[in-house]
Image (cartoon, rainbow, N blue to C red):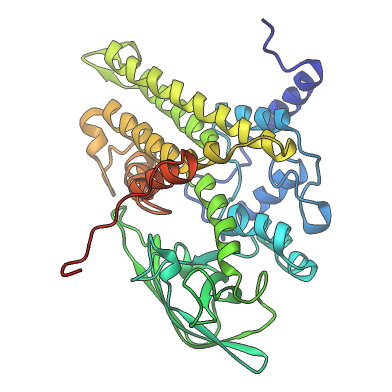
Length: 399
């Protein structure tokens, strides 16, 4: 059985490998932030060569290629094998941009997409609230129309990157009398607008990845809305689909697993390489099998974008649940491979990989909760994907 992609794709693979070899020393250093010039220059180089924003039209700053599943797969394989930096992929790129392409006005596409994919605009997502997390439709942050402006009051929480973001895409209630899934609108506005107060929240990684954000009489032009007034829930659901697929992409998992392989080749137990230890090797092979399964599931989802007749609803639902738990286990194996050194943190001189293994272990433990907890994801899969009965509600006392 010939499982090769064919000679035309062999040529393309060679082109990708040549780019990687020519640019190994040009990629950003580990830890470079999205606002740094080296990250933006690298982003521009990737887009120019078609290795980022590949199918986004050129008029919006993308490469403008036709969708090709195999080419996308080859890029992911080669970048992952070389552990090459794949570019910046914040919430604006992975979540907002696809929705703007689908539902935004032409003016919004021209204004936001190019600057977003090139890293000139950093976005955050204003969704969760103290009383509206898993039940997001219960949000109470409100926006009232005053002439040509929305006036926003309320609070958001767990707002990733809000402390460094230029803009926010935010769910607000514009029709308070409507049922909770209706009367919600999707607004875009700058984070330096008067009345916005950002308070960082330090998480278990030791850094402030999250924030709580307060809005007090924040005034936003009325045309900075995506979709129609009161139809924000439809936009939000489209965004959530992109979010859950972007939280733990399988190609990043394979790249990280390749890092574990290198660790296992370098670290030793009683003078023996960890890679030669059958117990650790067995754990590695099991994880490799799961990563490959996720990669093939991703190819199925990619092909469905071209062949619209395919039903991939269930295939898309499992990505967040399986992907985040898989990444957490990969980071765990990396820590276990290092033995007692794996417990190092902060400024410990024995750290491997600048502490990225410990940081990512904590980070993905958080992502098992964030973006919809694993328990919520299982309910979604069982009820919406498999058609099982809904979880019974607990009767209230005295009812």
